[in-house]
Amino acid sequence: MALRRGGVVAYPTEAVYGLGCDPQNLDALQRLLDLKQRPWQKGLILIASDYQQLLPYVTPLNAALMAPVFASWPGPHTWLLPAAANLPRELCGDHSMLAVRVTAHPLAAALCDHFGGAITSTSANRSGLPPCRHPRCVRGQFTNALGAILHGSLGASSRPSTIRDARSGAFLRH
Image (cartoon, helix red, strand yellow):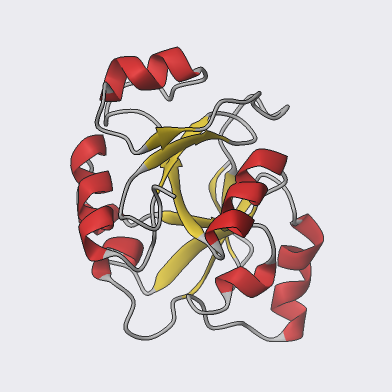
């Protein structure tokens, strides 16, 4: 599997094609950032098929603060949770929080399950270009630089996931 070999893969999500890699592989993280032409300081999102896959990367909040998080998953809702200690800087960027989501997209969830854990999820596009919504667009922007492209239909969302701070409930992206 390309993810286990340090590759970057493209896959359909709820709204756009995403790029993913092993979040614990520093070379893969740097390759992903280089492909996107994205500064590491921004951080990345992790997706998972269930909350258990995210536990190595986050510090859970109390039950009252986690309730709206769990109520929104699975789905196109990304939440900022306190990052676990000693994560690669590329995951959190300049932040103490990590963006995480339990995906509702069946192929993205199956990819996480096949990999055996959470993977990065950032839109499949070079910085400044619109996100790809079809494998042809992914190939056009990244030619042969990806380990694999998982073909499939996008979900029903017309926009990328919302992003909210789990501590305050504030929206960072609608």
